[in-house]
Image 1 (cartoon, rainbow, N blue to C red):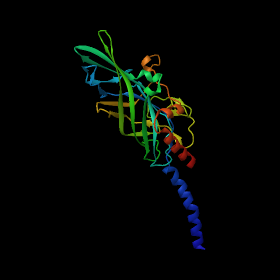
Image 2 (image 1 turned 90 degrees about the vertical axis):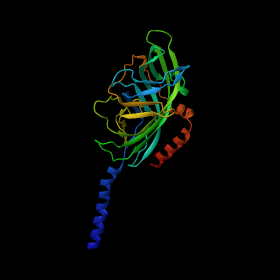
Image 3 (image 1 turned 120 degrees about the vertical axis):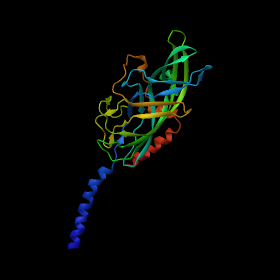
Image 4 (image 1 turned 60 degrees about the vertical axis):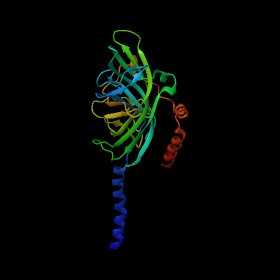
Length: 283
C-alpha cells in the first residue's frame, strides 16, 4: 500500500513540477518589425579616392540631431524561438539612413550627406538587404536580456559632397557591408525609447498589440557595426527616442517589399521559406 501511495504521489507531483518548470524554460518567438536607431559619436567611413580626389576618413553623425531616428532596419520575418537555446536567421532590410559630416578637399569645405541609394525607392535591386541571427540564450525576463543577435547587411548608399561656398556637388554611390558583433536584445522596450505601435503583421511597428500566443517584440541594445568589405568604417547606434520629421526629405524611408517580390530578388529565400513552413507544421 505504501509503495502504491508513493507511486501515486510521484505520478501526481511530477507532472505538476514539470508544469512549473517548462514555462520558465520556454522562450517567446520574435515578431517581424522595425528597429529605430539614432547614430552615436565615433561613426565614420573612409571613402578612399573619389573621381581621382583623395577623400579618406569622414566622421559622421545623425542628420536630424541626437536621439532622433536616422537609421531604420526592418526585420522582414518572424524569428521562431520556441525554447531557450533556440536560434533563427531572418532577412532584414535597411529602410532609412541619413548621416552628415564635413570634409576639406583641395582647400574647400564640403558638407557630406549620406543616404540610402535613392534608386531603391523605384527598383528593389538598389535596396539594402541582409540577414540577422537571433539567439534566445536566457529565460524570458522583464529586467534582463533574452539573448544576443548578430547581423550583416549590404548598405547601398549615396554620398553627396556639397561645396559649402557653392558649386556642383560630387555624387558617389557604393555598397558598405555593416557587420555587428554579438549584441544583447530584450523583449521589453527600454525607458524613453521611441515606440511605434501596430497590430501583429505590421512590419513598421516595434511594439505590437495584441501579441499572438508565443510571440513578443524585439529591442536591441546599443550596437557597433563594422564596415567589413574594406574594413573602412564604423556605425555606432542606439535605439532612438523620437521619429524624424516626415516633412524632411531625408526622413523618407525605402518601401518594405512584398514577401513574394523579395523572394524573387534574394537568393536562397525559397529554401528558407520551406524550412520555416516545416518548423511551423511541426509545431
